[in-house]
Length: 203
Image (cartoon, rainbow, N blue to C red; front, side):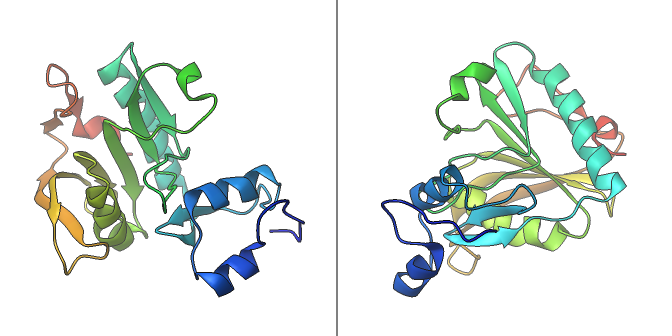
């Protein structure tokens, strides 16, 4: 990050002193003002800037495989976004590994999507974070279909049925978590006539 004067708003240090957190609109204004460098790999999670997981080769390959598999499964009328922001809520602008949204690429020229059909995270070292913090965050936003491509155990963990859970990181969790193995297929909730082979998602 660089020392940039941000017009018409407090600088991050002042915001942190005042509230300890950033709103998504404040975060986006910092981006527009050039406060972040391309090397600053962060995402906004519940008002806090969180460093993104460095990509090892299996992780990068998993993202590329997932992109191919989801594009084939969803087809026309859907967009698969790769590590791009979503407007999840007022305090969060995460950049999941893969997100499927209805529409076309040009629909999101002016703003990031705020409604998603499916979120997929590819995980090895970040597995615990994706199972706990990210899962709770997505459940709180009522994301109905969340998959974790678990590279460690070579399964796809299918998270569904978001519901309140006071003990969870952000007060919500998924009531249904099912592991799908390499010989299985997974059917997206948004497209019940289609399916994705788990083997196609694993490096």
